[in-house]
Structures are given as structure tokens and as C-alpha cells.
Image (cartoon, rainbow, N blue to C red):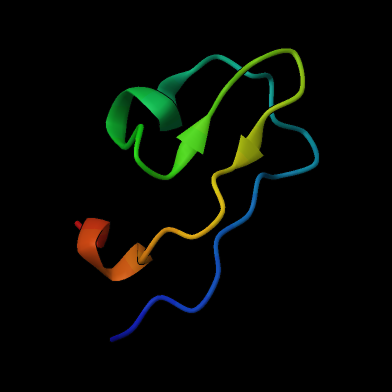
Length: 45
């Protein structure tokens, strides 16, 4: 199944787990964000 979007939950505590798992998609700072221009299906696991 193709991944069409990803997001950061409103109650995210910015612990860095998502970036640790998939740094190609996530970038965690005091204001976390999803990286733009990423083909998410490459990281579906």
C-alpha cells in the first residue's frame, strides 16, 4: 500500500524516536517537521 502522507501528532514530545527510526523522513528539533520531497514508500517498514 502506498504511503500518501505522514504527520506529527499534536501531542508529540519531540523525543527523537521517529528521526532515529527514519531520519530520511523526520527531522526533530524544538519544532519537529516532516522532511519535504521524500518518497515515503521507500521507508514503509
